[in-house]
Image 1 (cartoon, one colour):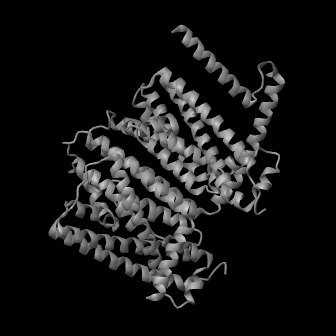
Image 2 (cartoon, rainbow over the protein chains, first blue to last red):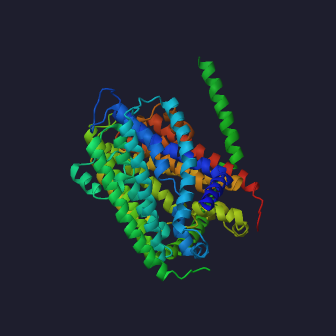
Length: 267
Length: 301
């Protein structure tokens, strides 16, 4: 445990070594929110309007909530795993007395804690300059479900990153391409990180719901907004848990096979 | 009143004269046939270099077909997902700030075309940082071609190139739904190139900033995030953001105005203002580049 605490600390300090990079990354997050915020602001110009089952307060809460949820779920360092495999740097870790997965999860947690603290200030800043109507959830049960769904979302995304990174065992140059296609494009659109998925036609929603993506952003936000209650929330959490088991099984299988073909190119 | 106007005009003339002199443009009397011929020759010379550099760049990517496939699929998916999102959103909301779903999609298509065209031509900007931090820019500086040309257009992107024809077709198809007049089409094309000039200016500014701060990756991504605000009509934004996107980072001029021109929603005054500000932005970015280049220290070489 002590060694992972040290990894956490070092990783945290490393983020501050490239301050400009980090600040610019956060500026980008705020800029991205502007597009979505003003888009919905234009749709809900009339405060009494209800579209896609959302009122103005609900949708603007969804948009601002994205900053917090995305910074917790998607802030991650483990995308670099693909590069480590292709450069042969994975060998360095295989001979060390640390679990490679725990090492990266610790680094991810460090990144998440830093990003999350910045995200709170950004949300506050946007709240002050945009003055949106904001919904604050007060039901403690739903808040617990929300926190639980966030932890599950974080696990889902981490497992997905490890599975996608494992592609580099077989295609060393395709790591970034695979992450671009799956971890960035597919996740961004199908998780609800850009728009709530219920604006899509029912048949598309049904297709997306058969994937683990909605449980990364859309589901936690729906729980926070109180649109998914009691048994539906429990059902959603169980499905998230099931997806975690499935992805964990795939990950261990892929990594076991991947390590057998790993030849430490570049070392 | 008339005196005041005359005074203001003379001040504008004075400053414009100063600006033109500082740009060291050829004097009209020197603009002879020989000058035009040597200019065309030079242009052809650079075109041949560009073809050569693009061929090399294309071959590099084409030799890795799996990566090409992944990125191409990613780009197509991103485009399709966003188009579908806009379509279903405006369909469900029954319009957006007074625009129909076809109009909103057309704004997005125009944005995509300018964005992809600039990525196709200026992809080398994304690789500029390594040239500066390793000092390898020295090797470019000593070559008998413009350094700016080399670092801006030295690596055309084949993935973006593949996506241009279908996108162009989509722009023509959706644009045709508005039944534009010849004047509207002419203004669209004119303002499209005007917007492209702004994109070029932004890329030059990012390169200059790269020399001064050694930071490219985030600057270019912030530029892209800012330009992405033009995916939708600029009218949806509140002041002062709308003002910033029109006058400081002219995203409105770059993306929204061409689309509006095709829909017949732009005045001739707006066209003139847009052309002027794009040319001005371009020259300011050139000046910035020249300033930054003088600060290059050749460190690490």
